[in-house]
Length: 115
Length: 114
Image (cartoon, rainbow over all chains, first blue to last red; front, side):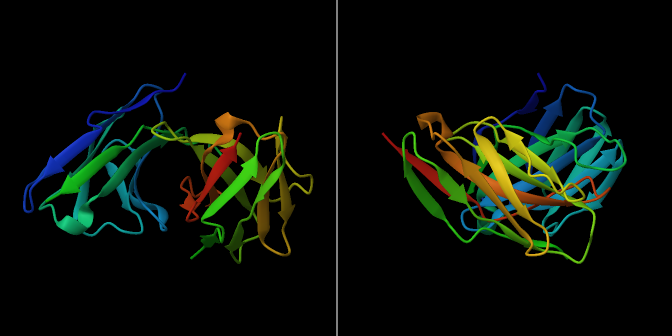
């Protein structure tokens, strides 16, 4: 079974702190994603990576950065956390076959509260 | 940009009954993929069903089936013989061909009444 593991399920951080959310997948997937999930808004893509050291901005990249130094690991960084970044963050991965339609596998989510 | 709309924030159904969740999308593309994902409480989101836009036949996976109306840009999910384990948030999602990433709707929370 594919496993996408997010290292922290629940975090509470202070405004202005630098926050790291870590994600690891064990299926040698090329693609990795960070989504943010908010009630009434669904999931919105923050960043997407299709290869090591490659990244692409999603729909809401402001205030976030990412790092992918190894194929299995994709980190989301909040440079200076703000209260409007309180949310659930979902990491996901998928294989790349060129034409799309592949299943995306999700982690359990990280609940971040910024106070 | 493509958008996906789920107009039913919440739905409920009696156990063993049938329920239909609605989804509409906006696109100018002719080739794409549509998905329904299920997010059970405190558990990982999983794929329920997938539809390729070039296929006229509606996808089916056991008790789950879709009604894909390409001209109307509608993609509803029908759950037959609802079970307590079907209680979850359901998300409709769109993928442009080759895009490798999904656009999600707002979600519908489904409650199953015993």
